[in-house]
Image 1 (cartoon, rainbow, N blue to C red):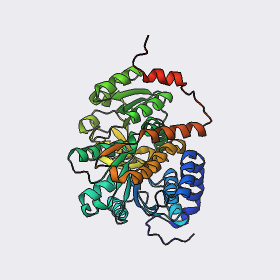
Image 2 (image 1 turned 60 degrees about the horizontal axis):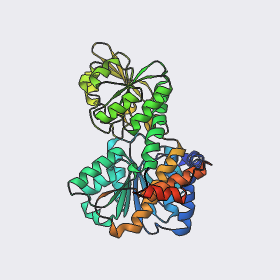
Image 3 (image 1 turned 60 degrees about the vertical axis):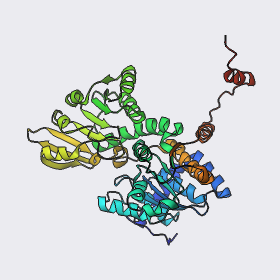
Image 4 (image 1 turned 180 degrees about the horizontal axis):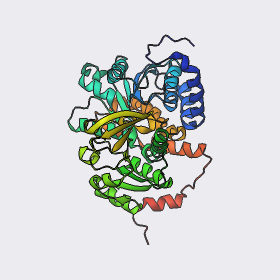
Length: 422
């Protein structure tokens, strides 16, 4: 189908393959499909302009289709230079008439030009995976803030940034923290990122994890998922943490816990999952053994101090696709995967669709909620309403063919009372 939408994608001729893959993902996203069917009938987003800065994947394509079915005018740009699936971007433009600005491997200037293009759409709703659109609106396009009724944010890193903006009294419109929904972080962050991160490391390197000392930095929901899956592949998992509660949890989950200074000398494979910068810094790089592999699964490529790695190297070469070999002055070789960007999307396909079904159901229903409640929302970061979270869980169980018990009236009364005890 010819399109009149503005776009910047690699090649529209890739669209047929993208269409096939979008359909495959859709089969595993029944909750989002049910929302799309209702949206098409009810048109809750009719007339609203949406700027979405998300990973341009098959799953995201089905979210864009859902928003469009609900009446929204959608512009999509990439939230990471390496996460775009070019065939999906082409299919969204050519088949589904969505304006897309995303090319896998785009340079930094093009990446921000694409974000500017999304902001040029003059959005009334924003959807972010890392708060880049919101960042541009608050720094360069402040005159547009009054047009935005609300935004959503899907990453831990982005929510941290936006809560800091709120704390400074500088947040220009309400944000719904999709990342904080239980049907997002308990499943997407743990099971989705856990599996897809291991997938990305193995695709990039083809190494055997069994018997390796696998260092996971950060034991939030993402770190828990990566640790669980690495252990399941036979790796000896070491966790580094700054939070004493999470460190205790990691120890009681059976993982060795130590500072990065110590782990740097022990590890064969390192994966950062903290959302902070310089987690693996120069002093750690100088301690690592020959052949150590470095990967990141946090949102931005700041967790590994790449500039220090480059300055320490006597020689740099591409060892294989998505693998850079840094030979140090003493002959040791360190391997950086995917330019230090999210390895699950840089070298693999990101989360399985069955998990993203819940995350993107949260996105769609949060957008609907924002439109319905725009007049009463303050310039704050809000959690996803509990009734939306529970409804998504209920629908997911239903699509999985799982039924659960219901409280009897007597049980519900007991739980609500204070004077019924022993």
